[in-house]
Structure formats: structure tokens, C-alpha cells
Amino acid sequence: MRSKNIFGLTLLLAGLALCGVGLWLLLSPAQYVATTRIKFENDMPDSAGEISYDPYFIQTDFEIIQSQLVLSNVVVSLNLNQVWGEKYSNGSPLTVNESIEVIKKHMRLAPARRTKLITITFYSDDPMEASDIANAIAKSYRDYRIQSQKEIATKGLYILTEQYEIEKAKIHEVQTNLDLLRQKLGIQSQSDTPSNHPPEQQPYWNEKQKLEQMLEYHKLLGKKLSLRRWIWKSLKTPWFKPLTEPRHHNFPSAPIVFSELHSVLLACSR
Image (cartoon, rainbow, N blue to C red):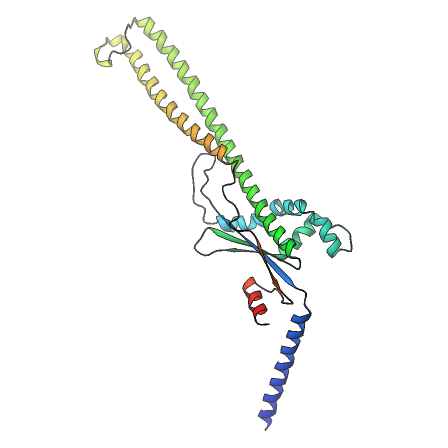
């Protein structure tokens, strides 16, 4: 008999708990979620023109997306200090850091397994706000990546151009010395092979062989320089972009907790 009473009391408490949850869901404000995806690429060359594998690339860029470097641009572009000041601070504008903290509180980042995609999700009680901020975060990160890669490419282009000009000056110097040696040694034809010349002409042929090697190296540098210029120009166009426009969903009175999946389950259970 006692066990039946305990069981009945348990059922009563469970029922009251469910009623409380239902009432909370009913009275909670509607929540919206906006999601956009970005394709991550880590195949841009460094300043030396080399492509290296970075196993921490995604983790590092997750931190960059959540940094002031990226999120401050979101705050400025959407005037969030003023907008959220009206919403959260009785009309007093928030500081940039305060607005960034609000963004981070409502933002979720997640990698898509076995892909180069990451999902940027933003939660808000305003569907347009959720959509605008998710888009703005993706755009600000994209702009950051383009700018940082362009700085690397510009540095590499400068180094390679400088090296190309230095080699060009060396070639000119060797060519001048070669012409002087040819006149001094009375060499009439530059097409003779090193095997049919007197021993006293050996310095000339050594210098000529050196010049040919330098010209070949200079030609290779020219090809690398053309490629680097092409890479630099290509960075004017975004090399990655959001794959989908942010979507917003209305989950009436459903609390957004832990993840979008959990929110969907709560919304569907109503």
C-alpha cells in the first residue's frame, strides 16, 4: 500500500513538472534561428609560395571568428551598439565589447563532419536580426581571410620581385664582364664550344657558362613571378563564400537550449 502511495506521488510530481514545462513553453517568447555555411580552404600559399598543412586550421579560425577582429565589424556594420542599447540597456548604447559578448552568447559554430564546411548559427527573438547577423558574421570573416591572404600574397610578391630584379642586375654585371673578356681575349665568335679554344680563353668560357645558368634561373623566377601576380589579382575576388543564405525558423514559445537540434525536438513535441 505504501509503495502504491509513493508511486502515485511520483506520478503526481511528474505531471506537475510536465505542466510547469508546458506552461513555460507557452509563455516563453518565440525564438528564431538563422544558419549559414562557409567553406573553409587552407590551400593558399604563404609568402614563400609554399602550401603547408595545418592540423589546427579549423580550431584556429573558430577562435578568429569569435574574436574582436571579426565581430567588431559586425557590430559596426549593423549598428548593434545602438540597436541593442535600445533593446537591452534602456536606450543607453552598448560598448563594442558588450555587443560582442551578446553576439558570442547567441552564436554557435560547428564543423560539418568529413567536409570543409562550417555552420554559423545565430539565435534571436527577431527573425531579421538573426538572419542579418549570421550573414554579417560570415561576411566579416570572409573579408578578414581575403585581407590576410592578400597581405601574405603582397609580401611574397614583393620578395619575389626584389629577387627577380637582383638577379637581373647580376646578369647585367656578368654580361658586361663577359663582353670585356671577349674583347680582351680577341674572341670573334661566341658560338665556339669550350673544347676548341686556347687555354688562355678559359676564364671567358667559364663566365659564359655561369651566365647561361643565371639566365635559366632568371627565366624560372619570371614564371614564378607571373604566377604570384595572378594569385594576387585573384584575391580581389572572394575565394570562398557562404554556400546558403541564412534560414530562419519560428519555434513559437520553444526555448532554444544547447543546440538547434534540441530546439527542433522541443518545437515538434508541442
